[in-house]
Length: 266
Image (cartoon, rainbow, N blue to C red):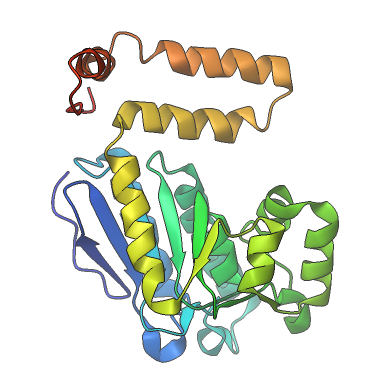
């Protein structure tokens, strides 16, 4: 992978040999998603889909200590025509969907509040570690719109239809502890420790066979949308692609030699 460009609204940093930290970097406006951030993130996700290079896991977080992402930038949207709004949202749709489709695992390190499109962004990641001071909400119905970046689909898949209906239809915030209890967050930590734990987990994932990790992510995501027998067949097809890889041979050899395997993604 060639070096990533310097983006206007997001910051990228390698925090290990194989782990990339991506930071939503508009702290003065709660890391709200504007048109430029849509372009920046779509470009990044497309680059990492096509040429991930040595990157094997990603941690997505927000700048500052109190807000992960406040959602769409409503100041920028104020006064938009229907055409302008629709075109911007089409950009956002591509950005979110490319994140969901990313072959590399993405951990959301939710360092603060995640509202509306911010919660939808966290939901588009593979799992969530959160600050115990964070609040979550899908507030769109209070603004005359509705979730349009996966919220009505990803939230019920994460926590169940009835709970999701309550959250989306009321627009009311809920706590990090509730997010944990509902199964939305995998773990909650003190605010200053969220990123550390997310990176630690990313390092563990990045230390595993990268082709195996990719196949697991693909099998869980697509298999979950199939009836069981077809999904089981899909899993076996994903499995069979790994049998003749160098990493499979290395993994078995390292186990028998009682040493740590050296995976190369081949």
